[in-house]
Image 1 (cartoon, rainbow, N blue to C red):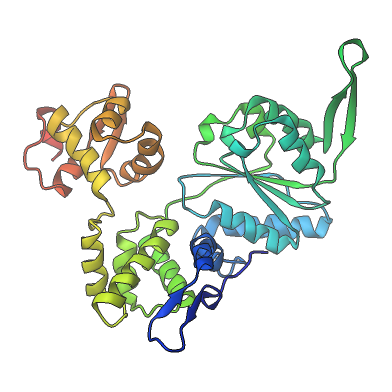
Image 2: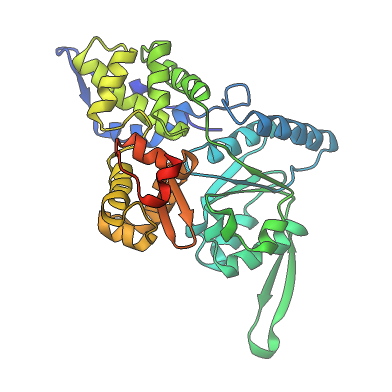
Length: 355
């Protein structure tokens, strides 16, 4: 399914020198990093236990009926494994998967071309499906429901409508904003699931697995130290493993212990709650400039120099889930827990009873 990249493909040690020489093709390493560590089956896919059990039953039933799997919709914050899960499903079904994203399907011929290229039983994965334009969405309706493609030929009075049959396929949609999907599109998915944030123990397992694949020496305590600051998100955990590994290699003996992990993450300015500089700047802005809120999202974005979408898609999901930020009809408010975490002693009058 995925191409597994070997470090030796990119780094070639110089025979006469002690240090490896980085070749130009090594720039492909980061592109293939995700593919290197992506699980290929349910046994190696960590977390989302309830979802995995449901999918195993659905896949087994589809195989017994010798039919494609129902269309699936996965939603939830970014980095929780929606794309990875689609690859696992394709592997378990024994079919190929075509991966694209909604912004790439701008013109009708884009979506028509990819639908016409599908083979029986194949999986089409569309990321950020809530960003599909109306024309592409309308084309998908008959394709998903009846496996037909409605096309028109000719001009003015000679226009004819053709129904082109499509092989039966499975569409897997992924979105971070399920509420922005139109009702007709959402209703055409037979299986809809929300991916949850990971627990610390689950993230520690993800980190240990990734470290093993990348030949990084890590202790159990070191894995938990990184997991604690990974915001419940495997993608962040895997990124931090690489950064902590760099620190361990340069400043220590290469082994990631609890102490090494904590020192490295302190340098990266990621605190024990997983908050980075942007998160803390957002919370401090609301506390110091707006008495804890409420304040509008546009005002926050302008004040800290971030895009509104970045705040909504990257910062807010975890801050809300961690109980540090609150959404109200009048805007965002900082919770008492955020005051405690950032070591503020004085609360606004309306929140003092909650402290």
